[in-house]
Amino acid sequence: MSIRESGEMYLETIYILSQKSSEVRAIDVGSYMGYSKPSVSRALGLLKADGLVRTDEAGFVKLTEKGEDRAVRIYERHRILSKLFMNLGVDEETATEDACRIEHYLSDKTFEAIKAHIKKYASDIQL
Image 1 (spheres, helix red, strand yellow):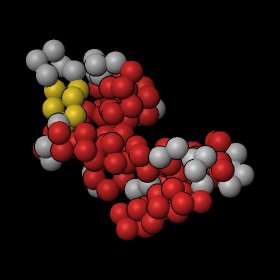
Image 2 (image 1 turned 135 degrees about the vertical axis):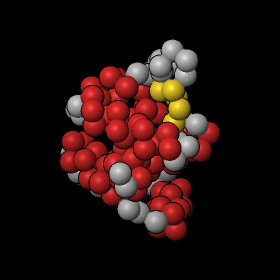
Image 3 (image 1 turned 60 degrees about the horizontal axis):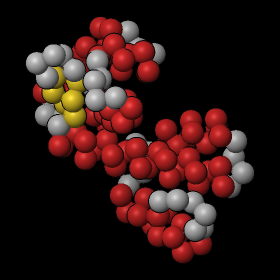
Image 4 (image 1 turned 180 degrees about the horizontal axis):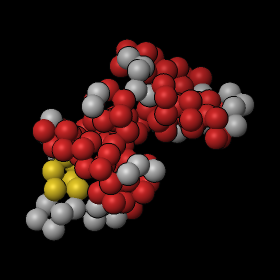
């Protein structure tokens, strides 16, 4: 699995689910993403091998510190880009879908420039 996009989608999903409940199961991840149990199991195995997730003794999926750092970064990109696009007049569904695609490929340099621009010119977008 390319940690670039699909791995980041899993990390972001685990992060979002963990904000709602401290008990995130693989089945919750699959349900949220619309993926089959075997697909989720394979992806989680690869993320574990990369040191990004772990499972506790009860079988709940947890982000490691490294995994959480990455998930928070991706979720911030998703949130800010979605709001930016909606601020430009794009409908919420399209803005969210586009942000989801772009968040994985945008360089840190460009994202920081976007955030600086928002701070300077678009204070109504919460960073």
